[in-house]
Amino acid sequence: MVGIYARVSTEEQARSGFSLHDQIRACRQKAATEACVEYIDEGISGEFLDRPALTRLRQDVKNGVITRIVCLDPDRLSRKLMHQLLITEEFDKRGAELVFVNGDYAKTPEGQLFYSMRGAIAEFEKAKINERMSRGRREKARQGRVLRDFHIYGYDYDKASEQLVINPAEAAVVREIFARFTQPDDKVNGINGIARFLTAQGIPTKKGASVWHRQVVRQILSNRTYIGEFYQNRWNTEGLLASRHDPSQPRRPMRERPAEEWIRIPCPAIIDEETFRLAQARLEASRRRWAGRGEQRYLLSGLLRCGFCGCTMIGRQAHNWGRQTREYTDKKQTPTGQTGCGLRIRCEETEQHVWEAVRTWLADPLAVAKAIDLDKSRDIREDELALLRKEQEKAAVAKRRLLHLYAHDTAIGLTDVQRVLAEWTQKEEQLQKQIAALTERQRMQHGEGMERSLLRQAIHHYLLASPDELSVSDKRELIRHVIREIRVYPQRLEMDTF
Image (cartoon, rainbow, N blue to C red; front, side, top):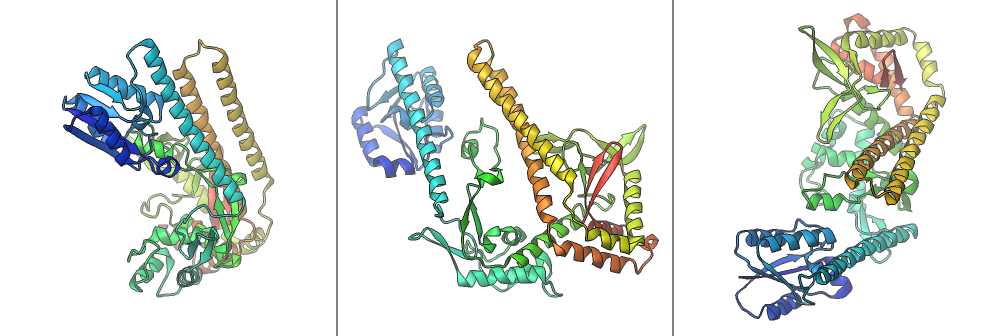
């Protein structure tokens, strides 16, 4: 039986006017028979191998149902030469004949060469299309134009002016969210309380859903668009779509580009900067206060970070000479593999040391008050940033040297080069995360009166009772009022206070 494969992507429909109907009609004329099965992928890019209709066609060829395949052109099969050759070889092994409307390619060295050249040209054309589209989008953003409707709650997208305009009804809800979060009361308190309140009021979300989730509220509270700062070119999605459609490709997360590459687009503000800054301070304080709340046995959950690799440290049970002991470690299993450099510290000694430090600070409220009024910009952080950026540049240089060496030395295996490149790329990404985290902590430390207010409230409340009478939960809450983060080294702890 004859199988007809046709494919069209949205961008090609707009650019070249390809029509599925025209493709199928041409393929039927080429097949010269009515006994045809049609396999159609509509609106799917040829960059990906995992396509529903193509997958069914390959399975039917494997099962012997289809013995002849008719396609308009090789780039309908795939836009990648490697995928074209893989599919062609797969069909050949099953004894299926592959025929193209626009030219037949004989199984001769010359024919195979011409077929490969056509595939390479198609792949090059796809790469150029992507490059031109990306460059065009960046230039459009630099001109102050919003690329598309990003469906931001509180705003509508004006296609004529290509700008964000305020949606009055949604903007009122945004102001309500910020007001109830920064000025909580007994009826509506916290992100969960706001989500329940909006659901009870029957207010729909941007997508029209009747139920508000806490994550949606958190995203609104964290979005700088509401103070008139909308950023484009912030996220690097290169390879993200391909990894979703190609099971052989490793899953790639969406990565944030360096801040200097972001393109800021002015837009009308809904919230004033002071309210937004107060909301960020409360979000940070809340995250630190409740991190690890479900595991009450570990007093410092969510506060510890390895001073070497920058990974957070978690509490766990460890076996030591037949005895179970509690420890904090940065070695943990994540969906992308194991992280951490293996630093471990005992829970009892660490918790006692931190608690004694907190008690000492609380015993001298004047010293604490003086400390929180000091300038928080530490030179050591600038040194850390400089060191991290230097290490990042070293990784980039190492990658360039490796590629240069591979280009001039054919004896080096491609597999080894790919493996080493992946290792350097992973190191670059880890360094970028550490730089971003350190930069964000610096930004949060400048002029955030909410953090100081929280500390003063904690001192006033907890000095009324004896620290020895506090429960474990009270200690955890108190520590999170006082300490933002603890960086752990083998011989010392560095505590970052509010």
